[in-house]
Image 1: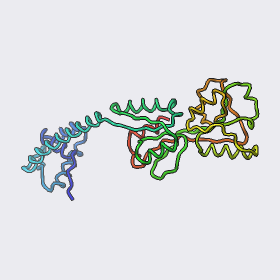
Image 2: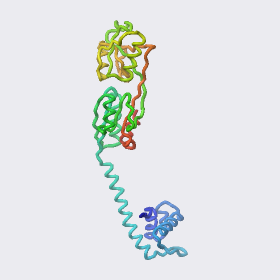
Image 3: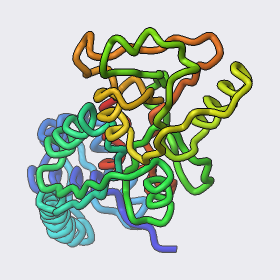
Image 4: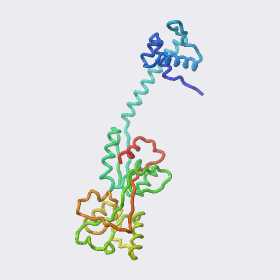
Length: 286
């Protein structure tokens, strides 16, 4: 197995030869005299040859030492060029990230996420798509999306899924206030596609009132449900993040002792991308 000399050891040695003094090399590199001596000794051991012959107040460079110093200067110049070019390439590299987010979360979180990504990665391009929780998670799993931000999750072993916020589902009602006083069992409901919270509401309602759940509309969009609720078409089961920005006094939250359901906001990504710096930003903005 090939082993390579330590670049710092090469630099300390080359500086000592160029300056003609171990003390001068130590001063230039902001280290101690013994540190330079140990580095040169380690380099000699690694190369298996004597590089300096130490005398009372100075040293004499061996023939092998001159050759090593010359090659070290070339190698250190190349190393500096490599670092500079790598940094420049990294700064200029175009990055594309594909984000999937529940539309209901976009007003509160998407703008913040995109601003933070842009600030940290000036050459970043983001493509954003909206969808249901299931659709977004499935797109993360098959690699179509890089980041998913949803309310709720699916348990898929290939994904890293981090809870970043928690909240509550609420039963919200808008429209004419004269209808608000009606008993809840006389109201109709607007729900999303079957999810754990919708099925829990139906079961709790059936148990409480011993009758079929009065489902008026099933719509796969909390935002659309919110618009219908505010127009007075029915009671909507919604995440509180959706109703928090509604005009005060334009709606009411129905309180019940027979139904409560919490939710969690997740950031999803493939486990194989878990160390990606771009993806990590999403975890930190919530």
